[in-house]
Amino acid sequence: RYGDGRSYNDGPIEIFHTGVDFAGTVGTTIAAPANGVVKFVGELELRGLTVVVDHGMGVMTAYFHLSDVFVAEGDTVQQGDRLAAGGSSGLSTGPHLHWEFQVNNVPVNGLQWTTTEFP
Image (cartoon, rainbow, N blue to C red; front, side):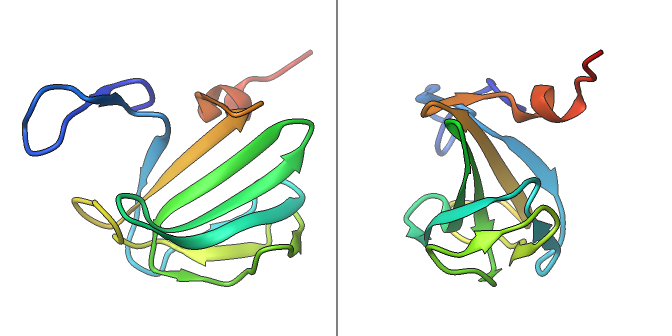
């Protein structure tokens, strides 16, 4: 869950979980939640195969532990476009999507932005 303490190899808590994990299988389609521009595609040591999308006005989303990517840096994406396939790359205990939501480079709980209804 977002904000939970995290440790490696059952050691002391070293970091806090800055995203939301969604269970899935290798190959599960990961779609863009909103329009944006792909800012990063690459392999990160702990987070594995990664895609980062800039949605404008300081809002960015990131997708980690992927098995495949269907976009390139600089691509413009529309809501619903296929970005990647879920996986278990990097430091992962099994297939899932680790999804991060940042506002002005600060991680926030993305579920609050996707489940809150405004009048």
